[in-house]
Image 1: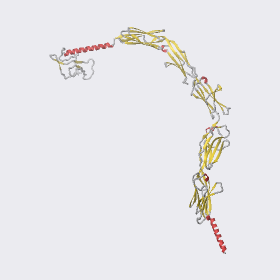
Image 2 (image 1 turned 180 degrees about the vertical axis):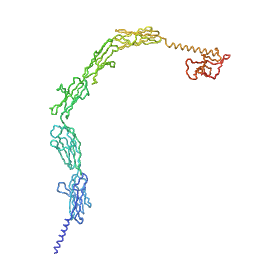
Image 3 (image 1 turned 60 degrees about the vertical axis):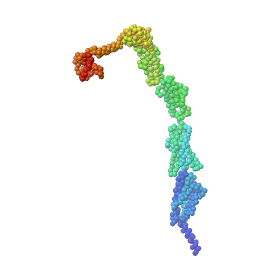
Image 4 (image 1 turned 180 degrees about the horizontal axis):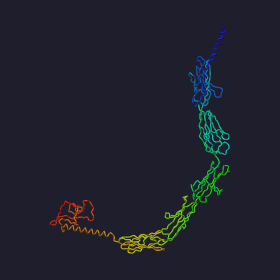
Length: 632
């Protein structure tokens, strides 16, 4: 009986404890995933609680394990209980991990996350009779890649290729996880398409764990793609998002044959005249530009030397006019494409004047001169003499010729539509005849003061050029002071001393005749003689006045009672002007007094001249008498 009782008690306790372990439970809370950047620290929390027990267990074991993705085995890196905490040695985390604890659980802290740290981290909690449990967190590491680099092919791509050709390559390096590359044309994505678009991807894993991705685009190029721009875009994952980065865009050189051409005159602008340098330029729509062949339609088998797409024709003449062609062969050398342009070289021949150079006319004669110049354009002809316009049109009419008709006549031929094209010609007209003296009078009447010198001028026109001679009577004192001549006129001048009446004859003569002009000069007294006479009279009067005054002072001339001598017998009025000569110590000058009323006097107004006012005594001395009144 005692044996049964002793055996039953341990069994009861075991069953009781077993029932308690079944009733207890550990609740663990962990993140399924944790995303961090390369090089950053990672904190992996592990929170736990016990349920179904009356009190917290006194002894709890916590362990951390790590397992690589896809690997069944795992490795412990940390152990702790109520008595100790142990970081396992010889692991990748021995030197850079730390575990902190609080009432809710503990947290695993790993410094300087590496790409190799992308693993599963397990947290295991064992509360003995309170139960045990474990959870895991998948740690994900991200490293943004470098900027994508795009490179086009150096050579052009021909549209004649029937299959897709390599256009460009794009590479992105040092990314984790593996980045993706997408191609764009003119900002529109390119999707793989049989016969049109191929994308070849090459992925490389570097020793440190980074990914490098190289993508090659093959594209069926068309002529319309000559202005297209290609680019690549890299997309990569970061914690909590996906980001993209675009490369630079490139333009691909597209080769395509010439299908259209254009040929034009590049210079000079406007109409072409003889002597100009002409440039004809040819252009096609092919790429690369083809080799152009220039020729003249009249000589198609004689190519002209050109500089690339330009044909230069120096100093052209009218024989260079014609149709010019520009030809090009396609890449296969079979199809010929050509374009044409017509070149017209305008000209103006030298002017032909009739009569030529020199023409003689008689006075009164009529003449018709003509001027013609052959031109490819409409011309205008103008006639000039000494810079002045004298005619318009191809002919010039000279009627009733005079000596003024003589001279050089120039015809100017111009082209209104091409002003730089012009020419001229000329003719010299000489009118022949006897002398013609300048002036309308055959005889000239002149007067000159005796003793003066007079210059006489004589001009004569004629052809042949007349000579001038002088015949002078009435004076022996004369000489020719000037004699000059030009193509149209003779001019002579003589200087004659006039002492008496003179007759001078100008005689102009040539083999066509003679003409004279007579100068009749009458000698007159000069105004200088009259002036001398007047001066002598004034001197004489002054002398007589001095004698009278002297005699008066000596008393030789008796004085009247009043001492006044009136020139007129009429009585003076208050308006008369009175001039007195007084023996006044201050002044003995004549004083002219104005009338009281200030009016001007006419020729009949009276003037009283008071020569002197004296009182005569027996001894003949005159004593001045004082007067208080004045004559005004």
